[in-house]
Image (tube, each protein chain N blue to C red):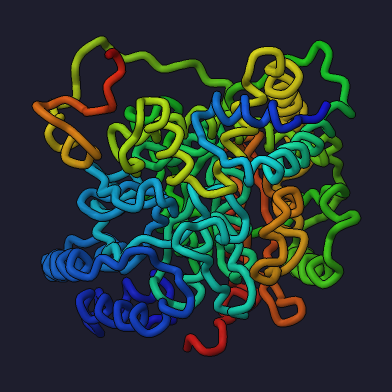
Length: 484
Length: 95
């Protein structure tokens, strides 16, 4: 049951082959069996999941249920969930029980999904390996000595090991696509503003975006359909109408113009990853697509630009964690300053502190123009590169990550080395474009991701391009040994 | 430009994060490493380029100035570290 896609599970539920309660119990048992090793979940919401499954089963009996009714999924622990702990991977929020649910959680609840629990993540989504979590690292189901990627590492490991049918993630600099690549999943970061940020704990508000992490593009389309749409509670939510994502999945790819940015295939790209990406592109040629080399000349600057913009926004967003209204508070503060300083020192881990301090510095008097303003100007240049590229091509393709999953601890002590993992994913966030990662042929026994980048609001086109590859190949069906 | 211990102390104070003497050397190294990365931005001349604050260049939406949220003070205060008579408690600020 657990190896089925959402589309297959929906069929099974509709035909009465199993009930949502049976399915939910099955996943809960798998979580109990495998999670102690993988550490993919921070919280398992057993009672609430079974209640939701019962509701979905009754709804299914009326014949009015949608395709997501009764499907067990997991939410990244960055989404507020009413009555259930929302930690954001931080000691700061270890005791935080959200007084409301995020828009993404609400919308999926309305669609009838069953929330199995909340997944582990890098603290406040700051990390590319899931090693900065207060709850400890997550293990990659393909090789438990390796990282699952981050920051949505728990979601990626949980879907990959079949501990849920799908999961939500968030992507500020690659946090959906990179773990999807390292764990062999389909991950979609929508256009900035496509999915409401309301109730999603903010990291860098001009970059943050939520999206689905699934086994197939078809499943990603189903989830995005429920997640996307205008929300007046998010001040940057887009009013662009939401198309029917499943309707366009089958469109033919003949004549599709694929752009390969030469900057994404240069030094630093692992040879095995390059070979797998090239094999996938060859498959697209067989499907009738055309390939041309393009250039994104400012893309090498995306990492430095991001590591100014994101920390700046994070230092401002995380100022709310002051030990006064919610979250961790230190013992016996001497005075108000001591209360702030010690609560934050105890509540935040090393990576969060580094980013808050960098952000504080680049926004401080005398340094703003040299760092923050400079970065915002470069952001414009990076975004213009993509605008020019999309005048010539329909989709951009390249690797999601320069290497396969690295070993736990390998980069944990070197922040800059860790940041360079995001070299191919960050520019998409700076420009606000939609991006996807698709599983392709393994390299050295480990999953590899092919990245697709589309023009604004072209999620439907990306899903179509992804789906056609998945119809022609079986790379997305690979499953980690030991989790059958 | 490179940060020293006193810069790091000043930044930590601005960020309201207490750091111990033992941690300072580590932060000096880490923050300087990140700033060296940030300084790669200087490779490009950005004179005359306008800053981009928002990916979609959209204008800020406005709504009528009306209260739309119900009063949920008790619920919100239920998760606070310390409250009394509907107020959030902090150490005494004025002697």
